[in-house]
Length: 259
Length: 259
Image (cartoon, rainbow over all chains, first blue to last red; front, side, top):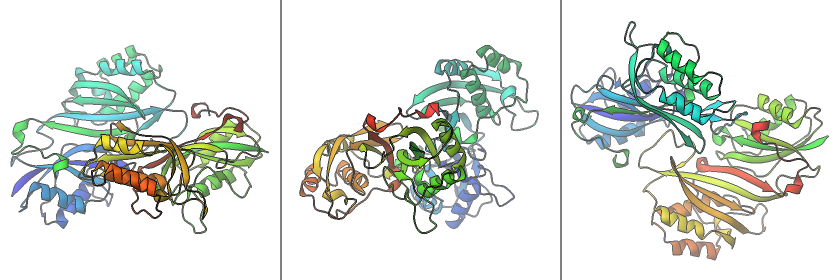
């Protein structure tokens, strides 16, 4: 029996989020557990770094589970991929410490959020980004991102996982980059509140459109009043990477190329 | 009554290609005609620049139709967008000459084909690109593209629209660029044979993987023997742009931002 750490990618469009539900809703967790059961896994549940919402994508969700697998981790990754539907895939796999937990051991998470600015619909971009109109001023967007870095009480932008839990988080890095198809925010923090990235993007875009001043944005962060309205849509969001300190792994993470 | 020239974008994933079919298959043409009928259009058919295959995308398909529309072209574009499903959209609209034909008047077409090189599946990229493994050598790919430019008999790489038709085409430009998510071929020609881009990509990738020498690739072009096997999958292909000489339009094409 060993504990495996697996990096998953999925297209969230046709999932009711990551977490398994009582109802027969299609979730990533249920699909992964079903795939594992088909290759002999008999445990009750897998562990995950985060619970992405309905419609949110992931390039680097991390899960862990115990499995008495008799072949190499690479063969396990391939076996899982053969049994997973086309919108979920194993990207990397490694043997972890017996007590490794993908959520509690994570030292940082990185999300990406993509937007593009056009007046009319574009079917080829709207699967993975939020169409925003009027266009944003990129410098204003970047200035808004700079206000986020550091340790803040983000109560205005999301709720903690447990009631009465802390709403203080540390953003290590936040910045927008220009891509061929639009603009992308990359934000890294020790952890995120529920809905935090989507609320921050919503307010940042308002600031970028000059519908909200940077001062008002900064004030909203400082005031830390809960229940701020406004939420950017899920399809622009991607759980891009979860980081762990290296001693959490028995062996180095196998790059997907080597599975 | 006026003739309208409309630029369409669509995600081809859930379409059985562009062209309307006798069977009840879902096609782009049928959806566009249904949307037009809902706003009062009564003609039999729309005209199109090209017939994209099942699963092929378009950023710049061009269609034309006659319509006794009493408001502005911009209002027509908006009315169409309100009546089209989420995977098709009008990107630009203009009034054209009464005899404008999107296929016969086209002076050039540009296609894009996207690939990425990885051993394992990636659900977030495979909707719009072809996963290729082993990895390609980019310089070889670029050298293969250089062999394509100019006027050649492309009989080895596709069939003409009409039986016994010419298989000679002129490629104005062909080159690969690196993107964040992979590699993209952009190829512009006066016209293309049926399946030509997908066959050229298939052979170029073989050359890029050193499974075929550039000499053999060049020989295949020169020999012009029909019925070459091999076809890159449809989801990497995008009909990106169709060009017309400016006198084909009564007014300038309205940019999508201005609809």
